[in-house]
Length: 278
Ligand SMILES: Cc1cc2nc3c(=O)[nH]c(=O)nc-3n(C[C@H](O)[C@H](O)[C@H](O)COP(=O)(O)OP(=O)(O)OC[C@H]3O[C@@H](n4cnc5c(N)ncnc54)[C@H](O)[C@@H]3O)c2cc1C
Image (tube, rainbow, N blue to C red; front, side):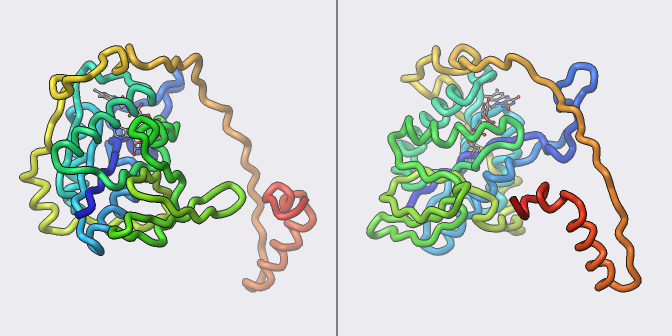
């Protein structure tokens, strides 16, 4: 049976986020925490594979103890097991340190429940936003990486092959790769399902597996947390909002409004700004 690991991160809901005008930092207090949007698309694809071929789906996150709620949401959607890697020593991790711990966790998941055939990550997170953790994990696990995936065209568990469509800036790339692979998911990949009632009931009672630094005997402490994070934020600021000009286009009928709108756009330089012409 296939074994799929899904990497998720609990993030503040960016729709509710505000900036402190004095300090120019994010106000996280009172902001609801959600599962990173793109990670849900990775989970949905894993669950579709499970529905079609049968698979074990294990979700994992490195985060504070409160990230347990995010894992429970994944269980309610249909994941089989959930692993929370948490320890104060892991805190303050940048993407280098995070990818180290996440890769080690996937190795331990493989030792515990069997080899992992597919790893799903989101394209990026809504808060950190770097998109580096997925490729970093793939490098550390020496796994084929398929980034920016918008469609899984074919999966053959017998031949251990997968064909995906990668969304590039100037087109779509169709790639065939042998398993195991790490995929980073785009929103176009699918529409995440809602939790089922049995799933919600299971999630209420479910206790995620919790691993701390003590559970990784070969852990190199110089590679985790703040110590293992060479990234330095040199400066952060809020960009000046761009002025927005609004124009009301009127007409007696919808056709007339459309025609007036077309003429208005044609007369101004708006088409160029919208990228319609050279
Ligand atoms: C105790 C503790 C406290 C933490 N507090 C914070 C905090 O306050 N703010 C913060 O942003 N981070 C926190 N982290 C997590 C960690 O620092 C970040 O996850 C990491 O820097 C990821 O960077 P990114 O958001 O740019 O990820 P990206 O590279 O944009 O993420 C791409 C994908 O990688 C996967 N991924 C990313 N992070 C994780 C993760 N932690 N676990 C599993 N999969 C992951 C997801 O699939 C994600 O879609 C904490 C961790 C611990 C242990």
